[in-house]
Image 1 (tube, rainbow, N blue to C red):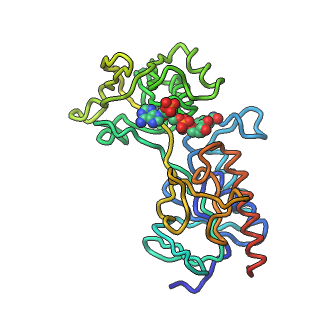
Image 2 (cartoon, protein in one colour):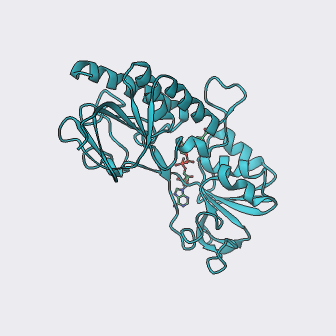
Image 3 (cartoon, helix red, strand yellow):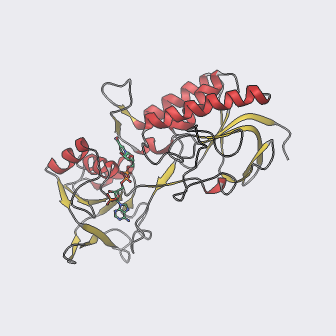
Length: 314
Ligand code: NAP
């Protein structure tokens, strides 16, 4: 068991975690940030961020998180690689259990974000990662130059991925299970009007083809109104159907809702059911899920942690 007890451990390096780091570091709390499998969080998989205040011409998502990281280290934030596998929050100090060590903390800010959801159709898993099925147009779009690709989903992510892919692909099929997009009006209008994007309305994906060949050779889809099946001749399938919160290691210690999102107690957006443990960002917010709202929650969590520590002895 370690003898060091950290003032505040922040789990996660997305907008929420890094903002919490900036605030707790500036409060001289010497925060430790645990960095998981996607440093920088979901924003690093976004291309241009056009709605983060302060950037009139937009900012690259990766660059934005890099800037936040630099800003937090300037005030003394420490970063360590490590995945929390479980926790013991029954008593203080709080315990974060990692594969190779235990970290003790007076306060914890959970900012673990959410992970892309998959459809579960045949071929998706087999062809995921370098074989044509992906969840990140920014990362993989350039591999599909002059090829036809499909994007699955009807939210802002799907519209954004489809629009981004038009830079490379010869044609983008946007496959959505209903006859209108859930995405914001501006993104929907842009996607529907784009000459390279073909909407495939009222359709669900049935199978990703190409498992035998080891790379995507098509996507079988089914029209839910007519029952008709057809094959889209695509080489890439971009899954953009929403996210699952990364909260498994914190349950059952921390209360979550039916979707797995961490619940905050009445009257607070960031206080969990455990005193000294706070939450920020997409692992608790399934409504707004914006970089700026995650940053705002990270700020709130940091200020609450600071208050907790000053009352309970930092
Ligand atoms: P989302 O809004 O939850 O949309 C998920 C989409 O996937 C929905 O259209 C849903 O269909 C569809 N879907 C879900 N499960 C499916 C399945 N098994 N098979 C086929 N389709 C399925 O998720 P999101 O697009 O990732 O957006 C999440 C949040 O982030 C939203 O609040 C969004 O506004 C925000 N966001 C903002 C920006 C931006 O402002 N630049 C960019 C990306 C995301 P139904 O519509 O029928 O439910």
